[in-house]
Length: 240
Image 1 (tube, rainbow, N blue to C red):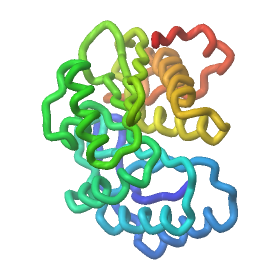
Image 2 (image 1 turned 30 degrees about the vertical axis):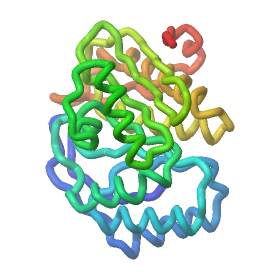
Image 3 (image 1 turned 90 degrees about the vertical axis):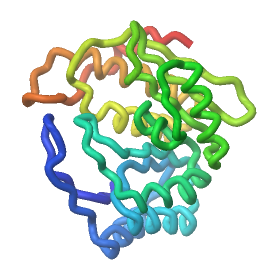
Image 4 (image 1 turned 120 degrees about the horizontal axis):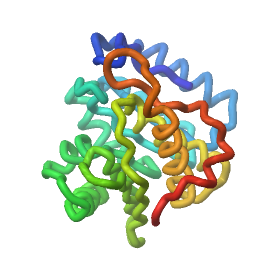
């Protein structure tokens, strides 16, 4: 793991963000890449332009084969997490270097410049992101209201993969997107193809949400339950 920023936050919101110094950030990246075989990389919050540029340079230096980018821009509680100049580097330089980008609806709206209220609009937004250089886009539809939570994987020159699960009514959604992108990277590291990794990660995140829906942690958006027994995964029905 490489720490890019330290946050002061709880289930109710983000109170402060402190970016790690450029020297320490680069030092962490070099230390990990020069010592361990990296089968997959997951990129999360890059708070400022300098952090984004350092990560771009590390990718060019070490050439990891599988890179999952979760463009973390807004926290579950609604706080903005990125500076504007970081977003430009992420779109212009990181998109084309990654295997998959995983925006939620709010992030996809910002990046595509359009309002998203339906699966048809999810598709149009994904096409815009692909045109910006993304090789694949996983549009996360959990923020859309409905009986099902539907995520759709778009890959250039391939049919979309639609994955749906029953909507879970809960306030415990803190870290949902971060967990999903990390699970995709983990399954890719195990050698799974991108569609299979996305499907398995969807099963995992659905179970983590379900098993944590009634847990009371704090007074705001609580976390998922990452520690459920993995065996029942086979009973989780994902349509697609």
